Structures are given as structure tokens and as C-alpha cells.
Length: 103
Image (cartoon, rainbow, N blue to C red; front, side):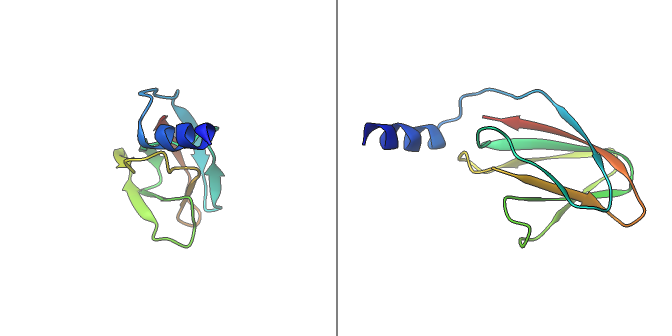
């Protein structure tokens, strides 16, 4: 029972650990990254050359968010809920996506 309580507390308090930046190639095919432990927040940066990279978290049936070329976005869930990041770009385009998560 104490383990369940400890796990619940860990899910509500950030450890303040920033994971190293992951540099991922992006194509029209959906790819994903799953951190070892769920993240509280994640910073994403589209280095191009694609004009837009589309991302969604945990469930691909949700609305995809676009990140324009040479722009970044921070997504903060307030709890350790980010278990998977899905990403893609438009047909025939490629990009580089920087991903930096926080535990």
C-alpha cells in the first residue's frame, strides 16, 4: 500500500530532472518516442526543413498540434502523464525534431 502512495506522490511532483535533448528525424510516417518514466512537460523544436511538424501525446486519436519551422513549443501536463510522443510531417517533407522532456 505504501508503494501505491509513493507512486501517486511521484506522479504529482516533478523531480526537476531535464532529460538530454533527443534529435529525431521526421517524415510523413508517424513515429514515436516513449520515455522510460512519464514526463511532466516536454519542449519540442522543429528545425526544418519541413514547414510544419505535427505532434500528439499518448493517444493518436487526439488532435494533432503543429509546430512551425524554426519554432518551439512547450507542453506542460502538470503531472507525470506524457508516456509517448507521436510525430510526423506532411507528405514528401522531412524535418528534424528536438525533444526535451522533464521528469
